[in-house]
Length: 219
Image 1: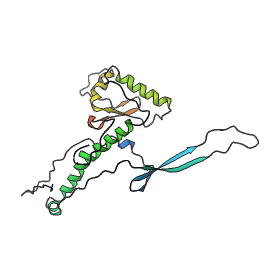
Image 2 (image 1 turned 30 degrees about the vertical axis):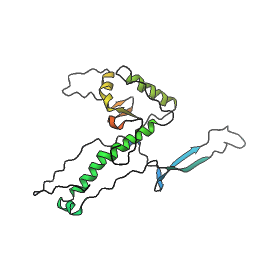
Image 3 (image 1 turned 90 degrees about the horizontal axis):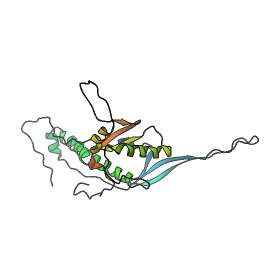
Image 4 (image 1 turned 120 degrees about the vertical axis):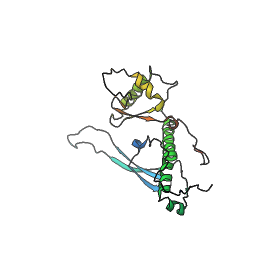
């Protein structure tokens, strides 16, 4: 279907944008990789050997350091070709192309990327999920249980992120008792818990499994 762009007799520098939340998984991006081809990336992996007994005659045992690039295939190749008529773009002072690009990223690319990432993480072996919907009476214990598992596996405290379904925002707020004073403005949103940053994810991006459609319809 051809692009439909209405040319106004008077130009008004106003674009009706579609507003959506930015990517919730940006913090999970890594810089330690290198594209090795069209559909593959190389991730740097480093390993060392453990401790050994000291010898007065030979000193410490020799250790090895192994560093190598592991090649990983990209599981999906997604994109969309969008055409903007050059004359129409010039007559709207270039705003059409910029608006289309921004809206396309916010409306389609970022939500799909977040949904795919969360579904991929959820399908990883060893990842567990709650059998029932969480309430204000058990949401904190569920978070503490997950934190205890990370502690026992020696996951670094620094950099931990707690992703919470946006529907659970008021439930999490009610689960933590607080005492209010005579503040003129109150903010009940919990932005962190036990040194973990909380990121609330729109529920239409929080899936354990998604289907990647061909492009004729949304994911």
